[in-house]
Length: 172
Image 1 (spheres, one colour):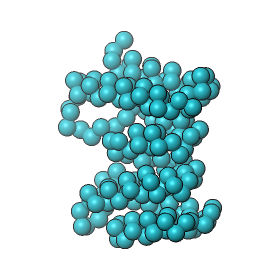
Image 2 (tube, one colour):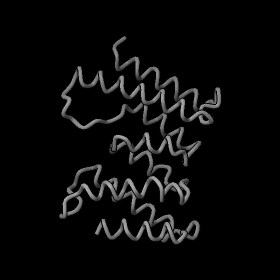
Image 3 (cartoon, one colour):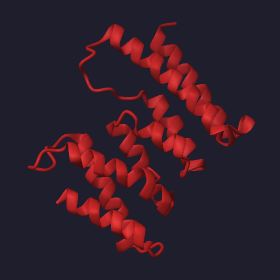
Image 4 (cartoon, one colour):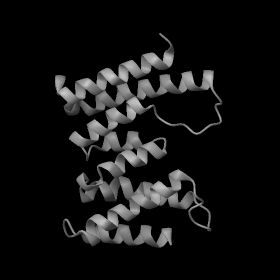
């Protein structure tokens, strides 16, 4: 088998294990993250050796599936969120948006809104350029506003309100 196939096979096996609950993988998220990081490094080495290394990195769909399942079971895991956001990818932002209603206010304040602010700071003064990652970042801010201010699932804390306000001002 070729390198990309082996990485995919490993990730699909991990996906099946996470879905079945074998070995309580979600309880050992730090170890799972180490495995995912190793798989990502292997995938990146293969990608650089076989393709144009200047192209934007995108995780394989098998890794996105594993991350979807892990975040579904443990949405407020700092290790998982940081892994998904580093490096920033369109699929990573989409993965987080898919479980956004499960994040608690601390996750929004400590991980997601700081990510949004950092990405907004990288954008030009003209705003969103049409790049998919930039649009995903704006969508993430919109989603936070929708959850806490439009749908009002729960009343936002003062700290979250302040962080959302600052991010919104940055976006404008």
